[in-house]
Length: 633
Image 1 (cartoon, rainbow, N blue to C red):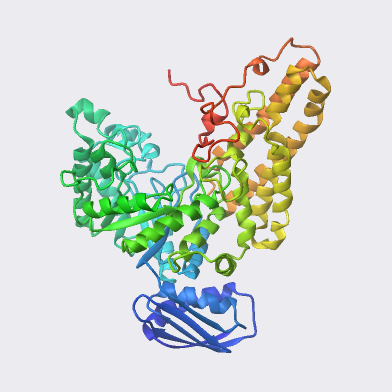
Image 2 (tube, rainbow, N blue to C red):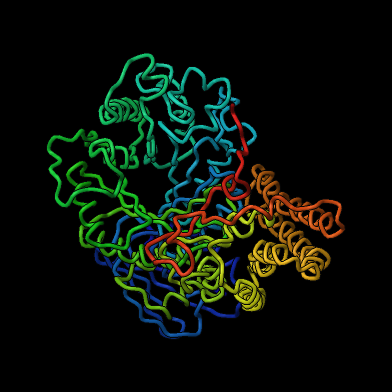
């Protein structure tokens, strides 16, 4: 494709290399286009195309790439598109701290996608997954980014007008760093730093200083969320009790002082300022509370209101009002729900995102970003972020989602079909229906990992035809390997997961029913046919997940996911041996199958359960056994 550019030389000079990279991604096409770039009125952007003559009106490189990508994807179509971006800064936070550290090439690919979507920030969430000179144990064996890798990513992001922002932790969520010998003199408790310790502030300064030459931006996210036991460990022993609201303020002021010294402009999560002042949970705030007596952050410290859970606009209005009383720099962070377990929850992500961003528009919040957490060991492949990310991005330019427009945006920017990806929502919509899993059930995870002889979750799937449900889902996902061919391995993984679940989800129920009725023929069929079929599909699942991981991420951390999936295989083999021992009368009973199947959640939470109740368990160690995985006594 031959492109000729004219017009605003300021933006054009900054995007030349990015343009060439996007052109290299395109299929070779024999088209010639004349593109004129003009400055737009504040808060607007537009694309007009008639034949080979194109005009882009915008004010930022990210908006330019959003417009350019439409032209590149539709070179034969006439276009007339006008948009009003609602936010000055709109970004995405990529979790690189839950064992999966995205490879440099994966991050570069994500940067290109963000630019095509018109987003201008990428926040890298790294608790201890960045290398710090002089601290060899910081992030040891975790695959942290080197300083040169961060500089490379920063340079690359600039080519597309994307601001790469470091996101670290300076209070809690540091258990991986503090477990090493250096942590003994730094920690209050297992994952929280000791407020007031000069050694702690020297440590934090070392962290902040190590990043100073790696990023062009001066913005930085310093974390400080979920320090629920703040001041109740070593600090309490050494200093006595002090209100957590005072400790949060004292600590944030000290860290802010270091940031000022090094030239950083920090933001932090807001939950500790909320919960320490109210003495309650984050979202449990009275309507119009009196905040005049609350401890408040310094005016230079940005405060990030994060809400991934609530579609109640009145709740978010109240939360934003409280945040504005605490800080003049309020940022909103939403969630795209790729962390539901092994499969994403797009229905909840889109419903909550739509409500929250509408409220942010009303309240004139200028800075928003979406989060893509990889909780509990990054069981969900990175590519699962895209539908939630595309919807979030579109809602930064549209007041409401138009399904046809969203599907076209997705295809243009992601290179796959939106409707293919959205089918993955069905994995955890077993009880509710696709798109309706607002309670965030995650049966695909606990029914995969649970032990078939124990059946800890079997009480809750009585009467549910899981075999038909997941067999149909496998048949629906299979063709996506061709219709979204760029993501063939991704869909092969989920097709295979559905095949595993089709046989395994209710395996414990079938085994116990046959055992209780002494149905030896059924048990023999399970031992000889069903379990071997699950094992074969599970082996393929492991190979596919490993392939995806090694494509997307550094190898560190996969060993734990390998152990989790390998554990399922091992227990299936053990189950088969136990069944055979009983069938061959080498044992008189199977004690595991004599155990009554009890409700895991409250007894009301059996199928069908109320939509406001959750059948959710995301902790692997609680799923696999009723015994302790790690006994510290």
